[in-house]
Image 1: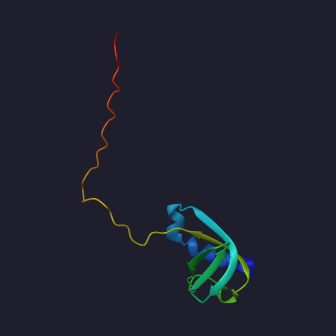
Image 2: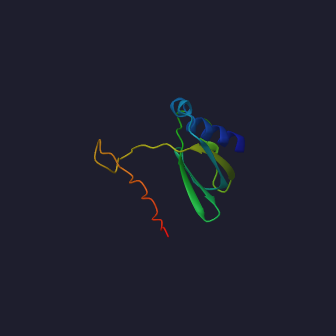
Image 3: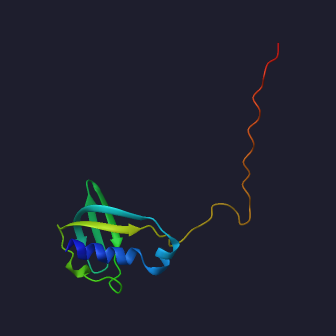
Length: 104
C-alpha cells in the first residue's frame, strides 16, 4: 500500500511539465487523517499537510486508508504569481557609503 501511494503522489507531482522544469521534490512521512479520491491529509507531529491527488493520472489513490502510515513525495508548484511592484519598475539598491576615516 505504501508503495502504491508513493507511486500515486510521485506521478502526480512529477508530471511532464513540472519534471521538465526541474522542480525540487520534497517528502512528508506521517499518518493519513483524511482521504478522498482527490485529496489526502497527512499528519506529521502537530502539523497537517493537505495534498491534491489527480485520480486521472494516479492509480491506487482509492486504497489510501485513514490511520495508515504513508510517505508523500511532492513538488511545490505556483498557480499564480503577483508582482509586488509596478510593471517595469526597477528596484535600486544604494551602494554602501565609505566609512569615515580619521587622520592625525
